[in-house]
Amino acid sequence: MTIKKKVLGAVFAGFILSGGTYGLFNDKVDSILSADSEKEKQEVVDEVDKHAPKNVIVMVGDGMGVGQLEIARLMEHGKDGQLFMESLENVALMHTYSANNFATDSAAAGTAIATGEKTNNESIGVDAEGNEVDSILDLYQDAGKKVGVISTNTVTDATPAAFTGSAANRWSGQEEIARQMLTNEYDVLLGGGASYFGPGKQNGKDLVEAFEDKGYSTVSTEEGLENVENTEKLLGLFSPSYMSYKTDRDELNSKEPSLQEMTDKAIEVLSNDKDGFFLMVEGARIDHAAHAGDATGVWKETIEFDQTVRQVVTWAEQRKDTLVVVLADHETMGMSATEPMNIEALKDIEVSPEYMAGKLIKDGETQTFTTESVKQVFKEYADIELSDEEVQEFLSNVKNNDGDVYAAYRVGWEIGSVIASHYHVGVVDTDTRAASSTGGHTGNMVPVFATGAGSDDFEGVLDNTEIMEKIANSAKFKAKLAKENSKGK
Ligand SMILES: [Zn+2]
Image 1 (tube, protein in one colour):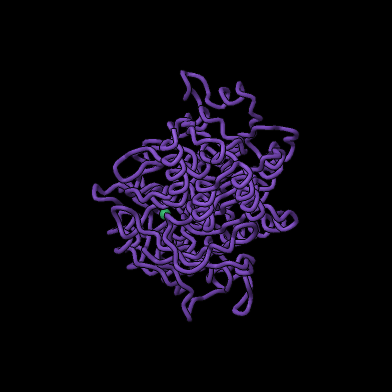
Image 2: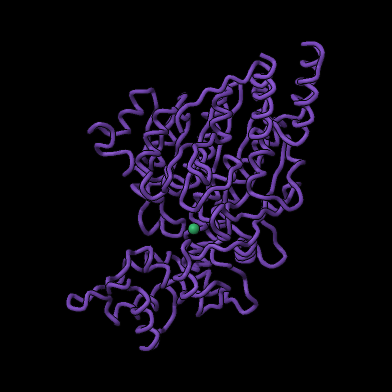
């Protein structure tokens, strides 16, 4: 998003600088506007100050519906156990539909959460008519706070991009989003997606060099991240594309940091600023595992996310000036923990379906996978003995209409579905996924958990456009003040 400095008057600036704006703020706007003296105005601002968070941390579990939480809870802690996020004091449910679809994608969902505007699937940071809209992160940056985004996806993909950029189409826009990130100088950017920053993405130069020219520390490994000290601005790109699944990191000898390590470092850098900060943290691969019906991956990714929530809330609790909102952008694949789900067998699986897909061997003549390798991979990694009919069905599912074999992640979807079926994971079937433009997202409501300064307002059944309002109440509040201020001139 281009920097759009709004002239909103001193009162508004003071308000935002004092922290977030939420619920009671609408009433307070009226009080401020009707106040007779500067002193009275100041009293209202001071009162709001007492409740307003200085820092805001929004944590998005992509595709993390109630079913995903239940699978993770059951597999990690057992039927009477509890995820950490369940302990947060304020809980709500949220509808997620987009402007043009009952089932949203992450682009439209992220945009609704970040800007308060419904948009069409595949659109980022623009409303349904294509007009650019400011995100809550932009608003905080304009108010002089530090801002950052973290994702285990590419740092330019839908959810982080909804907070930082605008693109009419998410698939064409990642390089553009990277350039917007440079222009707007967001303070902390951590995740995957190095391929969108170089080589040669900025007038033939690496975009990473352009960030360094602007004073950023840049890192690309866990060790590099750990060693960064005393920096004001930080760019960390740890993988050409998505960061690796938690389950695959050992097998791949990965040098990537965990979500916890990225979040820890981001807070260290951002909290240097006395004015406070806004940070978005995304556990992105819960969604990717869910697309494959991969309960094992959903379990591992959700637990990593939950541990990150614990770490953030533990930090915030010591300060009393920080709002933490934990939510999902939408649900993926209608996942559930069924009664006969074979938890032990699923726990024994040690790699992702996508990793397994990489181990299949193509037949030189038919350009499809050999029956032998399909049987061998399912046996070795999932302890499943496929019949010849099952192999044939699998092979017919991994080809597109032209008869070409899908990319590895997409073959992984089919492997995951076979495993889900064998071990009774509740998940939409292959045909339904194939018929779905989002690859299996559902309209199921998702959970919202909140704690800290200003979190009382997160309750009941919400729409995804209300989150931004509740954090900053900016859309209405900003429009209203701008209007009133201009009237007075
Ligand atoms: Zn998805």
